[in-house]
Image 1 (cartoon, helix red, strand yellow):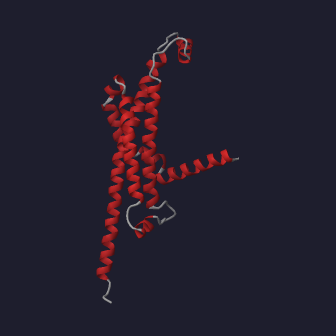
Image 2 (spheres, rainbow, N blue to C red; image 1 turned 90 degrees about the vertical axis):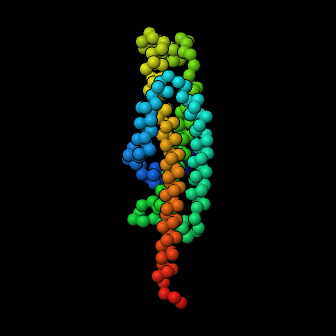
Image 3 (cartoon, rainbow, N blue to C red; image 1 turned 180 degrees about the vertical axis):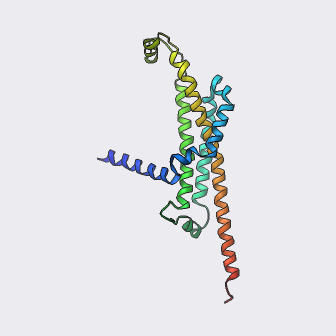
Length: 202
């Protein structure tokens, strides 16, 4: 009984995160994803000819650390009153506090997925032999030992490098997310100052 409940809990929290982030439309319409796609196209000589996964595996852990640090800053930012206002739901939608938290969760998840994909790609970078599973399948289908590698490797490298670029772009998005929070805090402080100035003297 414990295992199903654990999976239900994981599914529920991921569903809440996905809903707060905005769903598939917000992902596909993100300028950061578009920028990652452009970089993937422009830098195609790298992922076509070089072992890009070594670069990704060395860079992404630092990016994940940066994202976690930014998330910690967000969780501790402002006073209790500021956080209370940001955690207030309006019109049945997720509060700004949850939306920003979902954004940071998205950044971290993308970076971890990209890191795992880079490690998996490196794991499969080995010479094919006829006595391996992939060798048997490739030979049975076409008689060509290198069929799968020639056909599938460019697709996998393109997708993996795109994830790598998107992970880097989410670091930019995380920086802008922190900056956006500071503008909210500044706005609230200005409103409080204006309210205090307009209040009649006691």
